[in-house]
Length: 207
Image 1 (tube, one colour):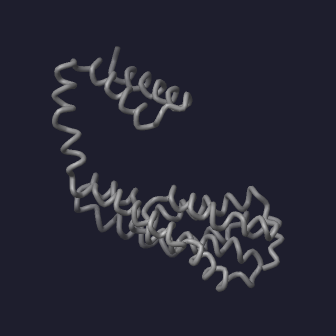
Image 2: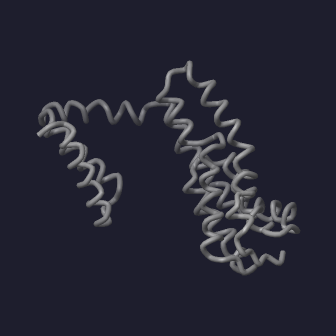
């Protein structure tokens, strides 16, 4: 069996394990181990596992990722997310659809604190979704705005995606990455807020 066929079969097995509610990390480890052993041998696998896991976890560069997530957790537990949402609502809440724009603004600011889009989406799902429902926003539109705010977080440093990309690319490409991120940071929220779907959807905000 070729390496491509093994990869395709392993990817399908991983998705099957995840669908069976196995932990994602365990599914990836199990499928990767079986594939590595099939393509090489048991001694090669044990030699790899003896050295590589320690090297990966001892890598100082990658330590920035859990620290960013921890910083976002601190911000969530301190109530900062709700305060950011309240402040953004005070700025734009008086215009039509202002509450939805406040979600985008608060997510943008929170994205500069936490590099995890999942953490941003989960945090504002708890902080902003009840308010959006209280002002009779459609559930689909409300959850979409929170999800968009989480996606915007990916473009704002410290972004975990940008950190991983910077680690994986040569240093000569870093200015290009930084320029792309800076051009996206301040342009994305207004663009998303002014898209035809956001402007034409039936918003019944009374704030």
